[in-house]
Amino acid sequence: MEIRDCSFIVTGGGSGLGAATARMLAGEGAGVVIAEINEEAGSKTASELGERAVFVRTDVTDEKSMDAAVAQAGRLGTLRGLVNCAGIGPAARVVGRKGVHDLDLFARTIRVNLIGTFNAIRLAGAVMAENEPTRDGERGVIV
Image (cartoon, rainbow, N blue to C red; front, top):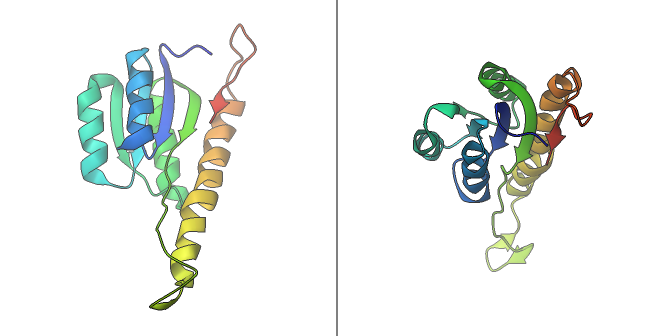
């Protein structure tokens, strides 16, 4: 996979594994969209990475929000990759001292971790499917 001069989207790119992935990609010469809901973390990571990185406040569960991140990636170069790192993992027992697990908390977790990931895949994938193949026959990669 050619990284240099291509663009990549990293969901959850403001911290943890997402930030580490964004740093690696930028270090290899990629344009990187930090698609992050946390403005402070996303802005900080993007500013650390310099001119080839841009923060886009992104809620992966929202189609318009994710579309904006995909559009921004196209401004940095041919979109060749999406790395899904956005996710939440609230700690709660199914049945605890305070009663049963809050169903809304579980639904939010599914919405972010599953539906948000699928949303990012389908929107970025649609753009990458239209790319001209590289000399290795690749149009893009999704992790």
